[in-house]
Amino acid sequence: MSTLLVRNAEVLVTMDPDRREIPDGGLFARDGFIEAVGPSDALPATADEILDATGLLVLPGLVNTHHHLYQTLTRAVPGAQDAGLFDWLRTLYPIWARMTPEDVDLATRTGLLELAHSGCTTAFDHHYLWPNGSSVSDQVAAAHEVGVRFHVSRGSMSLGESDGGLPPDSVVEDEDAILADSEDAITRFHDPAPGSMTQVVLAPCSPFSVSTDLMRRTAELARAHGVRLHTHLAETADEEGFCLETFGARPVAYAEEVGWAGPDVWYAHGVFIDDGEIARMAGAGTGVAHCPSSNMRLASGIAPVARYLAAGVPVGLGVDGSASNDGSHMLGEARLAMLLARLNAAPSLEGGPQMAARTALEMATLGGAAVLGRDDIGSLAAGRCADFFTLDLGRIEYAGGLHDPVAAALLCAPTPAVHTYVQGRAVVSGGECTCLLHEGHWIEEHNRAAMRLVNGD
Image (cartoon, rainbow, N blue to C red; front, side, top):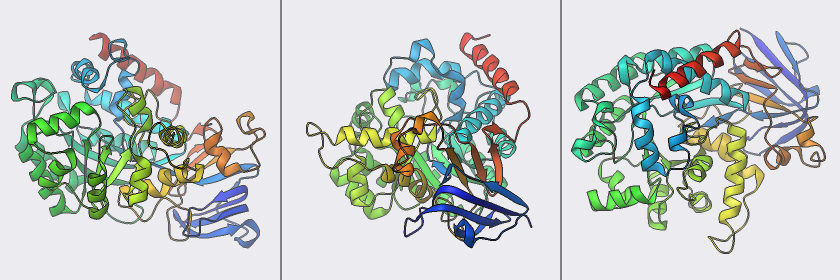
Protein backbone atom coordinates (compact mmCIF):
# COMPACT_ATOMS: atom_id res chain seq x y z
CA MET A 1 0.00 0.00 0.00
CA SER A 2 1.40 3.41 -0.98
CA THR A 3 1.20 6.59 1.07
CA LEU A 4 1.03 10.26 0.07
CA LEU A 5 1.76 13.30 2.22
CA VAL A 6 0.79 16.82 1.14
CA ARG A 7 2.11 19.54 3.43
CA ASN A 8 2.83 23.25 3.81
CA ALA A 9 -0.13 24.46 1.74
CA GLU A 10 -0.80 28.18 1.99
CA VAL A 11 -4.41 27.13 2.60
CA LEU A 12 -6.04 23.72 2.29
CA VAL A 13 -9.79 23.88 1.59
CA THR A 14 -11.58 20.83 2.96
CA MET A 15 -15.26 21.31 2.06
CA ASP A 16 -15.89 19.07 5.08
CA PRO A 17 -19.05 19.52 7.21
CA ASP A 18 -17.37 22.39 9.07
CA ARG A 19 -16.04 23.89 5.83
CA ARG A 20 -12.58 24.15 7.37
CA GLU A 21 -9.90 26.11 5.53
CA ILE A 22 -6.56 25.21 7.05
CA PRO A 23 -3.52 27.53 6.85
CA ASP A 24 -0.25 25.61 6.50
CA GLY A 25 -2.48 22.61 5.86
CA GLY A 26 -1.95 19.19 4.45
CA LEU A 27 -3.30 15.68 4.12
CA PHE A 28 -2.07 12.12 4.49
CA ALA A 29 -3.47 9.38 2.25
CA ARG A 30 -2.96 5.65 2.03
CA ASP A 31 -3.74 3.65 -1.09
CA GLY A 32 -5.72 6.52 -2.59
CA PHE A 33 -7.91 7.30 0.45
CA ILE A 34 -7.38 10.15 2.90
CA GLU A 35 -6.54 9.15 6.47
CA ALA A 36 -5.87 12.58 7.98
CA VAL A 37 -6.33 16.26 7.15
CA GLY A 38 -5.03 19.12 9.27
CA PRO A 39 -2.13 21.47 10.00
CA SER A 40 1.10 20.17 8.50
CA ASP A 41 2.77 19.70 11.88
CA ALA A 42 -0.06 17.39 12.98
CA LEU A 43 0.43 14.96 10.09
CA PRO A 44 2.89 12.07 9.73
CA ALA A 45 6.38 13.22 8.85
CA THR A 46 7.10 10.67 6.13
CA ALA A 47 5.38 8.96 3.24
CA ASP A 48 6.22 7.14 0.02
CA GLU A 49 5.48 10.37 -1.86
CA ILE A 50 5.70 13.86 -0.37
CA LEU A 51 4.25 16.91 -2.13
CA ASP A 52 5.50 20.23 -0.80
CA ALA A 53 2.61 22.66 -1.36
CA THR A 54 4.42 25.79 -0.20
CA GLY A 55 2.82 28.81 -1.86
CA LEU A 56 -0.03 26.70 -3.21
CA LEU A 57 -3.76 26.62 -2.59
CA VAL A 58 -5.02 23.02 -2.22
CA LEU A 59 -8.64 22.39 -3.20
CA PRO A 60 -10.88 19.31 -3.51
CA GLY A 61 -10.98 17.97 -7.04
CA LEU A 62 -13.67 19.54 -9.19
CA VAL A 63 -16.57 17.39 -10.46
CA ASN A 64 -17.90 17.89 -13.97
CA THR A 65 -21.52 16.71 -14.21
CA HIS A 66 -22.27 17.27 -17.91
CA HIS A 67 -20.05 17.11 -20.97
CA HIS A 68 -19.94 15.84 -24.55
CA LEU A 69 -16.28 15.00 -25.00
CA TYR A 70 -16.62 14.09 -28.67
CA GLN A 71 -17.46 17.73 -29.39
CA THR A 72 -13.84 18.78 -28.85
CA LEU A 73 -13.57 17.80 -32.53
CA THR A 74 -15.98 20.53 -33.66
CA ARG A 75 -15.00 23.66 -31.76
CA ALA A 76 -15.59 26.97 -33.49
CA VAL A 77 -17.08 25.42 -36.63
CA PRO A 78 -18.05 28.47 -38.73
CA GLY A 79 -21.60 27.39 -39.57
CA ALA A 80 -22.44 26.83 -35.90
CA GLN A 81 -20.75 29.80 -34.28
CA ASP A 82 -23.77 32.07 -33.99
CA ALA A 83 -26.69 29.63 -33.93
CA GLY A 84 -29.23 28.73 -31.27
CA LEU A 85 -29.46 25.16 -30.00
CA PHE A 86 -31.66 23.54 -32.65
CA ASP A 87 -29.89 25.15 -35.64
CA TRP A 88 -26.53 24.46 -33.98
CA LEU A 89 -27.44 20.77 -33.72
CA ARG A 90 -28.68 20.59 -37.32
CA THR A 91 -25.36 22.01 -38.50
CA LEU A 92 -23.22 19.61 -36.50
CA TYR A 93 -25.15 16.31 -36.63
CA PRO A 94 -23.89 15.46 -40.16
CA ILE A 95 -20.30 16.13 -39.08
CA TRP A 96 -20.60 14.01 -35.96
CA ALA A 97 -22.06 11.18 -38.07
CA ARG A 98 -18.60 10.75 -39.65
CA MET A 99 -16.86 9.93 -36.36
CA THR A 100 -14.91 6.69 -36.06
CA PRO A 101 -13.90 4.79 -32.90
CA GLU A 102 -10.46 6.40 -33.21
CA ASP A 103 -12.07 9.85 -33.24
CA VAL A 104 -14.04 9.07 -30.09
CA ASP A 105 -10.86 7.86 -28.38
CA LEU A 106 -8.94 10.99 -29.35
CA ALA A 107 -11.73 13.34 -28.32
CA THR A 108 -12.22 11.60 -24.96
CA ARG A 109 -8.49 11.68 -24.27
CA THR A 110 -8.16 15.36 -25.25
CA GLY A 111 -11.19 16.55 -23.30
CA LEU A 112 -10.23 14.70 -20.13
CA LEU A 113 -6.67 16.03 -20.30
CA GLU A 114 -8.01 19.56 -20.65
CA LEU A 115 -10.32 19.02 -17.69
CA ALA A 116 -7.47 17.66 -15.57
CA HIS A 117 -5.41 20.77 -16.28
CA SER A 118 -8.30 22.82 -14.86
CA GLY A 119 -8.51 20.91 -11.56
CA CYS A 120 -11.22 18.42 -12.58
CA THR A 121 -10.76 14.95 -11.10
CA THR A 122 -14.17 13.39 -11.88
CA ALA A 123 -16.03 13.82 -15.16
CA PHE A 124 -19.38 12.63 -16.45
CA ASP A 125 -19.71 12.44 -20.22
CA HIS A 126 -23.07 12.39 -22.02
CA HIS A 127 -22.33 10.55 -25.25
CA TYR A 128 -25.46 9.77 -27.24
CA LEU A 129 -24.52 8.95 -30.84
CA TRP A 130 -22.36 6.01 -31.83
CA PRO A 131 -21.57 6.06 -35.55
CA ASN A 132 -19.31 3.73 -37.51
CA GLY A 133 -18.81 1.12 -34.82
CA SER A 134 -17.85 3.45 -31.97
CA SER A 135 -18.82 2.30 -28.49
CA VAL A 136 -18.63 2.91 -24.76
CA SER A 137 -15.45 0.84 -24.62
CA ASP A 138 -13.62 3.43 -26.74
CA GLN A 139 -14.24 6.06 -24.09
CA VAL A 140 -13.50 3.85 -21.12
CA ALA A 141 -10.13 2.80 -22.53
CA ALA A 142 -9.12 6.43 -23.12
CA ALA A 143 -10.26 7.52 -19.65
CA HIS A 144 -8.31 4.73 -17.97
CA GLU A 145 -5.15 5.86 -19.74
CA VAL A 146 -5.65 9.50 -18.76
CA GLY A 147 -6.43 8.62 -15.14
CA VAL A 148 -9.41 10.90 -14.47
CA ARG A 149 -12.32 9.38 -12.57
CA PHE A 150 -14.94 8.73 -15.26
CA HIS A 151 -18.72 8.43 -15.29
CA VAL A 152 -19.47 7.21 -18.79
CA SER A 153 -22.94 7.23 -20.30
CA ARG A 154 -24.61 4.86 -22.65
CA GLY A 155 -26.57 7.68 -24.25
CA SER A 156 -28.95 7.26 -27.15
CA MET A 157 -31.06 8.80 -29.89
CA SER A 158 -33.89 6.84 -31.49
CA LEU A 159 -36.28 9.46 -32.87
CA GLY A 160 -35.11 10.70 -36.27
CA GLU A 161 -36.52 13.44 -38.46
CA SER A 162 -38.84 11.05 -40.28
CA ASP A 163 -40.51 10.23 -36.95
CA GLY A 164 -40.83 13.83 -35.77
CA GLY A 165 -37.50 14.09 -33.94
CA LEU A 166 -34.68 16.57 -34.44
CA PRO A 167 -31.67 14.40 -35.38
CA PRO A 168 -31.23 13.05 -38.91
CA ASP A 169 -32.24 9.42 -39.37
CA SER A 170 -28.60 8.51 -40.07
CA VAL A 171 -27.57 8.96 -36.41
CA VAL A 172 -30.46 7.25 -34.58
CA GLU A 173 -30.52 3.64 -33.37
CA ASP A 174 -33.02 0.85 -32.88
CA GLU A 175 -34.44 0.96 -29.37
CA ASP A 176 -34.06 -2.73 -28.59
CA ALA A 177 -30.42 -2.52 -29.66
CA ILE A 178 -29.94 0.55 -27.43
CA LEU A 179 -31.29 -1.25 -24.38
CA ALA A 180 -29.26 -4.39 -25.06
CA ASP A 181 -26.05 -2.40 -25.40
CA SER A 182 -26.93 -0.36 -22.29
CA GLU A 183 -27.19 -3.53 -20.24
CA ASP A 184 -23.92 -4.81 -21.70
CA ALA A 185 -22.15 -1.55 -20.77
CA ILE A 186 -23.39 -1.81 -17.19
CA THR A 187 -22.25 -5.42 -16.92
CA ARG A 188 -18.81 -4.71 -18.35
CA PHE A 189 -17.90 -1.35 -16.87
CA HIS A 190 -20.00 -0.23 -13.89
CA ASP A 191 -18.15 -0.33 -10.58
CA PRO A 192 -20.21 0.89 -7.58
CA ALA A 193 -17.44 0.39 -5.00
CA PRO A 194 -16.00 3.32 -3.03
CA GLY A 195 -13.17 4.91 -4.98
CA SER A 196 -14.36 3.41 -8.26
CA MET A 197 -12.79 4.92 -11.36
CA THR A 198 -15.60 3.99 -13.75
CA GLN A 199 -19.37 4.14 -13.37
CA VAL A 200 -22.07 3.83 -16.03
CA VAL A 201 -25.06 6.14 -16.46
CA LEU A 202 -27.99 5.55 -18.84
CA ALA A 203 -28.65 8.77 -20.70
CA PRO A 204 -31.12 9.14 -23.59
CA CYS A 205 -30.27 12.43 -25.24
CA SER A 206 -33.45 14.49 -24.81
CA PRO A 207 -37.25 14.44 -25.14
CA PHE A 208 -36.96 15.53 -28.78
CA SER A 209 -34.58 12.74 -29.83
CA VAL A 210 -35.97 9.59 -28.18
CA SER A 211 -39.41 8.08 -27.80
CA THR A 212 -41.52 8.07 -24.66
CA ASP A 213 -41.26 4.29 -24.62
CA LEU A 214 -37.46 4.39 -24.62
CA MET A 215 -37.47 6.88 -21.74
CA ARG A 216 -39.65 4.53 -19.67
CA ARG A 217 -37.75 1.36 -20.55
CA THR A 218 -34.40 3.03 -19.88
CA ALA A 219 -35.54 4.10 -16.41
CA GLU A 220 -36.69 0.56 -15.66
CA LEU A 221 -33.38 -0.91 -16.83
CA ALA A 222 -31.30 1.58 -14.85
CA ARG A 223 -33.17 0.88 -11.65
CA ALA A 224 -32.94 -2.85 -12.15
CA HIS A 225 -29.16 -2.46 -12.13
CA GLY A 226 -28.81 0.39 -9.64
CA VAL A 227 -27.30 2.94 -12.03
CA ARG A 228 -28.17 6.59 -12.49
CA LEU A 229 -30.21 8.40 -15.15
CA HIS A 230 -29.43 11.59 -17.05
CA THR A 231 -30.95 13.58 -19.92
CA HIS A 232 -31.19 17.10 -21.30
CA LEU A 233 -34.28 18.91 -20.10
CA ALA A 234 -35.69 22.42 -20.54
CA GLU A 235 -32.50 23.81 -22.03
CA THR A 236 -34.24 26.29 -24.36
CA ALA A 237 -37.59 27.90 -24.95
CA ASP A 238 -37.87 25.73 -28.08
CA GLU A 239 -37.59 22.60 -25.96
CA GLU A 240 -40.14 23.89 -23.47
CA GLY A 241 -42.51 24.50 -26.38
CA PHE A 242 -41.77 21.06 -27.82
CA CYS A 243 -42.78 19.37 -24.56
CA LEU A 244 -45.99 21.38 -24.29
CA GLU A 245 -46.97 20.74 -27.90
CA THR A 246 -45.91 17.10 -28.16
CA PHE A 247 -46.67 15.76 -24.68
CA GLY A 248 -49.20 18.28 -23.40
CA ALA A 249 -47.04 18.80 -20.32
CA ARG A 250 -44.25 20.97 -19.02
CA PRO A 251 -40.78 19.40 -19.08
CA VAL A 252 -40.60 18.20 -15.47
CA ALA A 253 -44.15 16.86 -15.55
CA TYR A 254 -43.31 14.88 -18.69
CA ALA A 255 -40.13 13.54 -17.09
CA GLU A 256 -42.11 12.44 -14.04
CA GLU A 257 -44.68 10.68 -16.23
CA VAL A 258 -41.99 8.49 -17.78
CA GLY A 259 -40.30 7.68 -14.46
CA TRP A 260 -37.55 10.26 -14.60
CA ALA A 261 -37.70 11.77 -11.12
CA GLY A 262 -35.87 10.84 -7.94
CA PRO A 263 -32.45 10.96 -6.27
CA ASP A 264 -31.00 8.75 -9.03
CA VAL A 265 -31.89 11.30 -11.76
CA TRP A 266 -30.33 14.57 -12.83
CA TYR A 267 -31.17 16.84 -15.74
CA ALA A 268 -28.80 18.91 -17.85
CA HIS A 269 -29.43 22.67 -18.00
CA GLY A 270 -32.94 23.08 -16.54
CA VAL A 271 -33.16 26.68 -17.74
CA PHE A 272 -36.93 26.85 -18.39
CA ILE A 273 -38.16 25.40 -15.11
CA ASP A 274 -40.79 27.22 -13.08
CA ASP A 275 -41.17 27.42 -9.30
CA GLY A 276 -43.68 24.58 -9.15
CA GLU A 277 -41.30 22.31 -11.04
CA ILE A 278 -38.41 23.33 -8.80
CA ALA A 279 -40.46 22.32 -5.76
CA ARG A 280 -41.21 18.95 -7.35
CA MET A 281 -37.56 18.36 -8.16
CA ALA A 282 -36.56 19.24 -4.61
CA GLY A 283 -39.20 16.94 -3.18
CA ALA A 284 -38.04 14.04 -5.32
CA GLY A 285 -34.33 14.72 -4.87
CA THR A 286 -33.85 15.17 -8.62
CA GLY A 287 -30.66 17.06 -9.46
CA VAL A 288 -29.52 19.42 -12.19
CA ALA A 289 -26.26 20.11 -14.03
CA HIS A 290 -25.83 23.85 -14.50
CA CYS A 291 -23.82 24.74 -17.63
CA PRO A 292 -23.39 28.52 -17.66
CA SER A 293 -20.91 28.85 -20.55
CA SER A 294 -23.03 26.78 -22.90
CA ASN A 295 -26.21 28.58 -21.94
CA MET A 296 -24.54 31.90 -22.74
CA ARG A 297 -22.81 30.63 -25.89
CA LEU A 298 -26.10 29.41 -27.42
CA ALA A 299 -28.15 32.29 -25.97
CA SER A 300 -30.36 29.73 -24.24
CA GLY A 301 -31.07 31.70 -21.07
CA ILE A 302 -30.10 31.83 -17.41
CA ALA A 303 -30.92 28.85 -15.22
CA PRO A 304 -32.65 29.68 -11.90
CA VAL A 305 -29.72 28.47 -9.82
CA ALA A 306 -30.44 30.60 -6.75
CA ARG A 307 -33.98 29.23 -6.61
CA TYR A 308 -32.68 25.67 -7.07
CA LEU A 309 -30.29 26.06 -4.16
CA ALA A 310 -32.86 27.74 -1.93
CA ALA A 311 -35.31 24.89 -2.57
CA GLY A 312 -32.72 22.20 -1.86
CA VAL A 313 -32.32 20.86 -5.41
CA PRO A 314 -28.92 19.17 -5.83
CA VAL A 315 -26.91 21.36 -8.23
CA GLY A 316 -23.62 20.48 -9.92
CA LEU A 317 -21.71 22.23 -12.68
CA GLY A 318 -20.94 21.08 -16.20
CA VAL A 319 -18.74 22.48 -18.93
CA ASP A 320 -21.11 20.91 -21.52
CA GLY A 321 -19.91 20.05 -24.99
CA SER A 322 -16.79 21.78 -26.14
CA ALA A 323 -18.58 22.87 -29.31
CA SER A 324 -21.15 24.83 -27.28
CA ASN A 325 -18.56 26.14 -24.85
CA ASP A 326 -15.33 25.84 -26.85
CA GLY A 327 -13.56 25.03 -23.62
CA SER A 328 -13.34 22.40 -20.89
CA HIS A 329 -12.12 24.46 -17.93
CA MET A 330 -13.93 23.48 -14.73
CA LEU A 331 -12.46 26.23 -12.56
CA GLY A 332 -13.44 28.75 -15.24
CA GLU A 333 -16.94 27.25 -15.30
CA ALA A 334 -17.28 27.68 -11.54
CA ARG A 335 -16.27 31.33 -11.90
CA LEU A 336 -18.81 31.88 -14.68
CA ALA A 337 -21.52 30.18 -12.63
CA MET A 338 -20.86 32.69 -9.86
CA LEU A 339 -20.83 35.66 -12.24
CA LEU A 340 -23.95 34.59 -14.13
CA ALA A 341 -25.81 34.08 -10.86
CA ARG A 342 -24.78 37.61 -9.86
CA LEU A 343 -26.06 38.95 -13.17
CA ASN A 344 -29.35 37.15 -12.59
CA ALA A 345 -29.56 38.81 -9.17
CA ALA A 346 -29.79 42.22 -10.84
CA PRO A 347 -32.97 44.11 -9.89
CA SER A 348 -34.17 43.98 -13.51
CA LEU A 349 -34.02 40.17 -13.46
CA GLU A 350 -34.65 37.91 -10.44
CA GLY A 351 -33.03 40.09 -7.77
CA GLY A 352 -31.61 38.76 -4.53
CA PRO A 353 -28.14 38.48 -2.98
CA GLN A 354 -24.99 37.93 -5.01
CA MET A 355 -23.62 34.39 -5.15
CA ALA A 356 -20.52 34.03 -2.97
CA ALA A 357 -17.31 32.54 -4.37
CA ARG A 358 -17.47 29.70 -1.87
CA THR A 359 -21.00 28.81 -2.98
CA ALA A 360 -19.76 28.39 -6.55
CA LEU A 361 -16.86 26.28 -5.32
CA GLU A 362 -19.26 24.14 -3.33
CA MET A 363 -21.38 23.50 -6.44
CA ALA A 364 -18.23 22.45 -8.31
CA THR A 365 -17.19 19.98 -5.60
CA LEU A 366 -19.80 18.72 -3.13
CA GLY A 367 -22.65 19.67 -5.43
CA GLY A 368 -21.23 17.66 -8.28
CA ALA A 369 -20.55 14.69 -6.01
CA ALA A 370 -24.17 14.74 -4.82
CA VAL A 371 -25.53 14.94 -8.37
CA LEU A 372 -23.44 11.90 -9.35
CA GLY A 373 -24.55 10.05 -6.22
CA ARG A 374 -21.09 9.77 -4.69
CA ASP A 375 -20.17 10.24 -1.05
CA ASP A 376 -16.48 9.42 -1.52
CA ILE A 377 -15.47 12.55 -3.47
CA GLY A 378 -16.09 16.31 -3.31
CA SER A 379 -14.24 17.09 -0.08
CA LEU A 380 -10.90 16.50 1.61
CA ALA A 381 -11.66 14.52 4.75
CA ALA A 382 -10.78 11.19 6.31
CA GLY A 383 -12.29 8.35 4.32
CA ARG A 384 -12.69 10.36 1.11
CA CYS A 385 -10.73 9.78 -2.06
CA ALA A 386 -7.45 11.65 -2.37
CA ASP A 387 -8.72 13.79 -5.26
CA PHE A 388 -7.38 17.34 -5.19
CA PHE A 389 -5.65 20.04 -7.21
CA THR A 390 -3.36 22.95 -6.46
CA LEU A 391 -3.11 26.54 -7.68
CA ASP A 392 0.03 28.67 -7.63
CA LEU A 393 -0.79 31.77 -5.58
CA GLY A 394 2.41 33.39 -6.80
CA ARG A 395 1.04 33.83 -10.32
CA ILE A 396 0.33 37.36 -11.53
CA GLU A 397 -3.40 36.58 -11.77
CA TYR A 398 -3.54 36.43 -7.94
CA ALA A 399 -1.33 39.44 -7.26
CA GLY A 400 -3.11 41.56 -4.66
CA GLY A 401 -5.71 38.87 -4.05
CA LEU A 402 -4.16 37.07 -1.10
CA HIS A 403 -6.40 38.83 1.43
CA ASP A 404 -8.61 35.79 0.76
CA PRO A 405 -6.90 33.15 -1.42
CA VAL A 406 -9.98 30.91 -1.54
CA ALA A 407 -12.21 33.66 -2.91
CA ALA A 408 -9.40 34.74 -5.24
CA ALA A 409 -9.48 31.31 -6.89
CA LEU A 410 -12.99 32.17 -8.16
CA LEU A 411 -12.93 35.96 -8.40
CA CYS A 412 -9.60 36.26 -10.22
CA ALA A 413 -8.95 35.01 -13.76
CA PRO A 414 -8.83 31.18 -13.76
CA THR A 415 -5.38 29.60 -13.97
CA PRO A 416 -4.26 26.04 -14.76
CA ALA A 417 -3.64 23.58 -11.98
CA VAL A 418 -0.07 23.01 -10.89
CA HIS A 419 -0.94 19.51 -9.70
CA THR A 420 -4.04 17.37 -10.11
CA TYR A 421 -4.26 14.12 -8.15
CA VAL A 422 -6.89 11.40 -8.59
CA GLN A 423 -7.07 8.58 -6.03
CA GLY A 424 -3.69 9.71 -4.73
CA ARG A 425 -2.00 9.54 -8.15
CA ALA A 426 -0.69 12.55 -10.07
CA VAL A 427 -2.45 13.13 -13.38
CA VAL A 428 -0.90 16.59 -13.68
CA SER A 429 2.39 17.40 -11.95
CA GLY A 430 4.17 20.72 -12.22
CA GLY A 431 1.67 21.73 -14.86
CA GLU A 432 2.56 18.76 -17.07
CA CYS A 433 0.49 15.70 -17.84
CA THR A 434 1.95 12.53 -16.31
CA CYS A 435 -0.40 9.94 -17.77
CA LEU A 436 0.54 10.18 -21.44
CA LEU A 437 3.86 10.73 -23.09
CA HIS A 438 4.00 13.60 -25.56
CA GLU A 439 0.71 15.36 -24.89
CA GLY A 440 1.49 17.53 -27.92
CA HIS A 441 1.35 14.42 -30.10
CA TRP A 442 -2.23 13.72 -29.06
CA ILE A 443 -3.20 17.33 -29.70
CA GLU A 444 -1.78 17.11 -33.21
CA GLU A 445 -3.61 13.84 -33.85
CA HIS A 446 -6.81 15.36 -32.51
CA ASN A 447 -6.48 18.43 -34.74
CA ARG A 448 -5.98 16.28 -37.84
CA ALA A 449 -9.08 14.27 -36.98
CA ALA A 450 -11.08 17.47 -36.41
CA MET A 451 -10.11 18.90 -39.79
CA ARG A 452 -10.96 15.62 -41.53
CA LEU A 453 -14.39 15.46 -39.91
CA VAL A 454 -15.38 19.04 -40.62
CA ASN A 455 -14.02 19.03 -44.17
CA GLY A 456 -15.55 15.64 -44.95
CA ASP A 457 -12.23 14.19 -46.13
